[in-house]
Length: 89
Image (cartoon, one colour):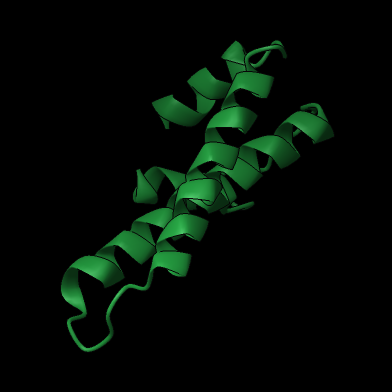
């Protein structure tokens, strides 16, 4: 998921020509959120030098909730064609 999210964020790979700018902004926000969550999870799994405090864990849960809310908003848009182009690359 992180690799796909990073590809979505790369304007050279996905220039989003003639796409709805609001839709593209939401898609990039989701991609950024997934990428950050994956990075945070990797840090929590592999870095034993710093304990994960409850506040940080809660903020990550809230970030995940926001991502899934954004996904539900995107379902209201006609974004199927854009999503297919992103997934097929």
